[in-house]
Image 1: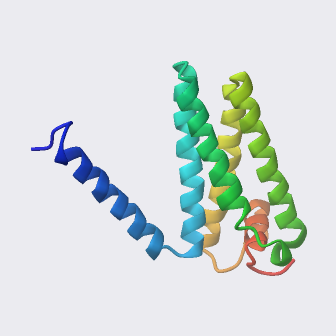
Image 2 (image 1 turned 45 degrees about the horizontal axis):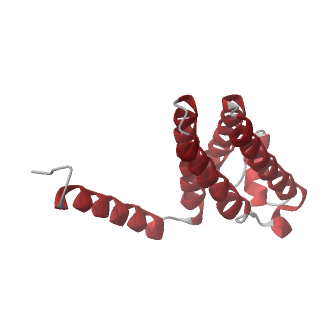
Length: 155
């Protein structure tokens, strides 16, 4: 039986960590980007809950985690050389998201967080579409922008 104290919870936590680490090690670069989108969105969902409940410290920690994922994960993974102008636009979009999240944290603006969640969702959909196709689909600008920024295809 698992109890709230003792080995049970720690064992479950360790098992979850190993599963996550194994998933990261085994993931393709494409899958890693999807995992970053998911991690940022989870952190922002948590931030919204903490904001609603007036939990200032937890809200700040969740927003900081999302900012770190966006800047150190998503933004850092951009290939400016291969993606050219489109990757530069994504870079600027990530800067905008981070700025909105800082403002959301300072001024308790859930609508700013919701805006960033929506933007991340749109980019996530584009990355998912790239995964089902070897090259970006010309008719979908989000797919085209994300694919070229990652070095898929030519401008």
